[in-house]
Length: 320
Ligand code: NAP
Ligand code: GDP
Image (cartoon, rainbow, N blue to C red):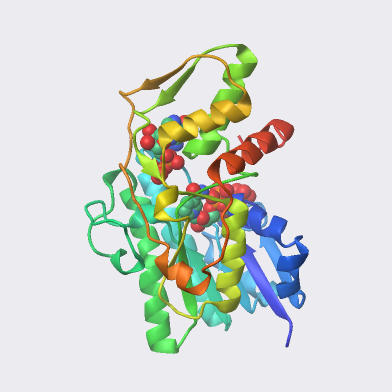
């Protein structure tokens, strides 16, 4: 087999670091002995700039692209910065898709999210429902920008026969996340806040009611599934990469698991004046299970323990 050059945009982030980590597992590596991976972050290139993107493709000549780079964040920054979520993501995604076509990339796998699905829907959500109605108002700009990846993938396939596809992960967590106190997703945000509260001997106030439900996937589980998609998933239609519906947990469950992993002994209260976001976005992994019936996901409590331990051990270098 000829050598494959795999360009991973957003390769320094949560998911990109997960892919780097699982490639050191001999079982995973065995599938990629012939592949050269290039992991790029925003310090290497600003993918919002088409000239920069074209230069990248000219330098590396990727045969395959995993497109992770995005303007990413939790509920509160999504509500505060809809313009950046819309513009940055739409521009980066269009640049990568156009360059992948222009430079003859054999396969492009981009990343959607379960938060792009319609707010008013039936459950469980599946891959056929991406465009069925407006997304939740808290992240409408990010959601619409992401949905356009699926539109572009289908357009490029119809007109040029391109093999461009996308995956739909649920909420992701793990080492190397963004632990910013205001802008991050719920798990890394709470890990950082519990860490500070423990260090300062203060109580913890959690934003929202704790009632919303989420499916969380550990970054290294997602990384293995991303690599499987790159190798073996041949459809242009998106595929949900998620734990099962029975693994859905409440934000309160997550709070308690983080407190336990952190050995936090103070009081925990919920500030119900703060936003809850979408109540749930329960997704079906039935399609994934038709391909990989035996794939084992790490249990959420074990994953949270690993994530807390990573943050404590790497506090000085963690993104925050
Ligand atoms: P992340 O940790 O925030 O990483 C984002 C990556 O994108 C970083 O490598 C960052 O580089 C890079 N990046 C940002 N802006 C860029 C720019 N203008 N030019 C070039 N690179 C840029 O995000 P993640 O959680 O790994 O997300 C990966 C993908 O999963 C994204 O497409 C996201 O939408 C999707 N997703 C995430 C979640 C979740 O819960 N995290 C859930 C569903 C889907 P620097 O680190 O150098 O800034
Ligand atoms: P979402 O799944 O897209 O809504 O994204 P998040 O990861 O931001 O999770 C939001 C949910 O967690 C909401 O119900 C918030 O009220 C709750 N939450 C509690 N504490 C925090 C926090 O410190 N940061 C974030 N982002 N959400 C929090």
